[in-house]
Length: 303
Image (cartoon, rainbow, N blue to C red; front, side, top):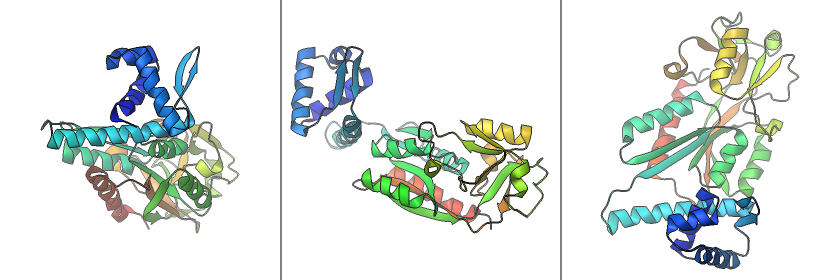
């Protein structure tokens, strides 16, 4: 296995075409095909599936691509620092469930480091994709929660995917809603009191199992239930139809504004918010700084 072969895999995945990748790499297509074939034989599995419609990554190939990207990125940083003496932009990518505080921590990270020497990426997405992005090294860190209901299943998935979960803090459960909601002035409410209002939950796509739900109490029989794809739509529905969602209660008015509140739910249920990372990887300086920013929200937990 060589660095050039890893670069070839990355180029082909970007172009989805051997011809186009060969042109970008300034080599002939037969040479490129031969190099990829030799690597696949060495690895013992196919990285790409070839068909009349083009070329695409296999499941193992997608996982391998993540490691290839990481190796090439680290090599370029070493080369820039010790050999060519040039400046190379370091990158940091994070995936997360739909948490405003996790976005705000990312904002604080960018403010500290600036964007001149770094390339940032943030992916606020479905639970399964958070896990997949960290497994495939598209993201260094993934922010999500565990509770008594989902932890056994998700930890099994983490273990199979070579990931580990690190807890940050434990939270009680809150109903997040517009301050115009008739229940907004209450100090505490029951799940039955919420039955008159639509529960809002994030769509999980093909992986819509209760275990992947971003909201706790996912198996409760809600009388009114609406799935949404993004946080902005959810906030609009909270105002427009007095909808609510269940969350940690950590409020970030800097991003969501002052029109919303969190009312504590009467339940013994808890949620543990933390992050997943690859077992075999060392958290980067920037990744650790982001984790530090997340940890600060422990002080914002409502009781």
